[in-house]
Length: 304
Image (cartoon, rainbow, N blue to C red; front, side, top):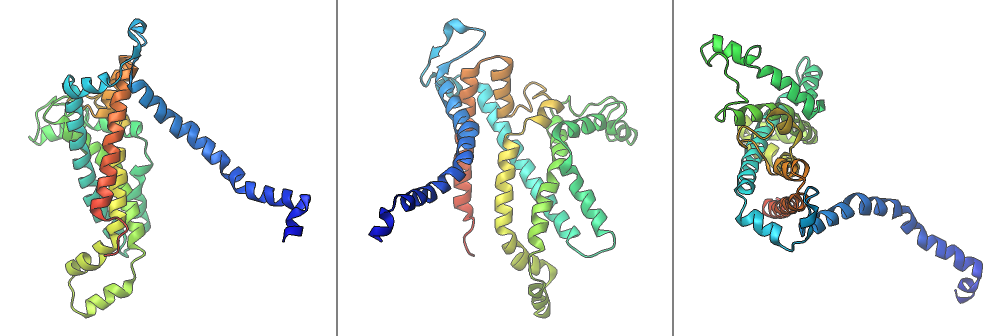
C-alpha cells in the first residue's frame, strides 16, 4: 500500500476522487448561500438598524429598539398577528376537512371519476391574483352573487361582502378555501391509494362499519400526511399576501391585515425597512417555534 500511494499519479487521482463530491455539491451550496442565507442575514442585520430611505439622517444602529417598538408601542403588530392566527386556524381547519371529504369521494370507483378528480384539483392551478379577479366579480354588489341573494331576501340590495367589517373575513375565507382545498385533496388522495384494500376487506368480514374502518384504518394511515400537509399549509397561509392584498388590501380599517401584509405596508409603502425587517424577523421566529413545537407534539414520523 505504501508503494502504491507513493506514486504521484495515484496520489493525484485519489485527491481528485476525494474532491469530486465537494465539487458536485458546490453549486447547490452556493445557491443556498445566495438565495437563503444571505437574505436571512440581511433581514436580521437591518432589523437592528434604523433604516428609512425617506429619512436618511436618522439611519444608524438601533440595537433592539425596533423589537421594543413592535412589542410595546405598536398595537397594529398585535392586531395583525391576531388576525393572522385566526386566518390560519380557520383556513387550515376548513381546508383539511373539505379536502379529506373530497379525497374520500374521488377515491371511490364510479363513472366519471377522472372528470371529477380534474374538477376537484383544477382550482389549485389558478394563481392567487386570478382567483381574486374571479371572486371580486362574484362579490360585485350589482352583478354578483349578492344581487341574487338579495332577490331571495337573504341580503340587502347593494350589499358588498368585501366592504363590511362583519362579512369581509368570511368572504375572504371562502375565496381562499376554494383555492386551498385541492391541496389537501391531492396529498390525501395520494396517500389513500397506498392503503391496502385487504385491510378494509378483513375489517368488513369482522363486521366493522364504515365509520370504524375510517377511524381505525384510514385516519391512522393518513396521520403523517395530515401532519405534514397542515404544517405546510399553516406556513403558506400565514405568509399569504397575494389573495388578501388584491381582494381587500388589508381593509376595511385593517380588519384583514395579516402580519406579512403589515410588513409590506411598513417596508414597501412607508419605506421603513428597518422596522419592516424587525417585523419579518419576528414572523420568522414565530413560524420556527410553531413548526418545531407542532412536529414534536404531533410526533410526526413516530410509529403508532
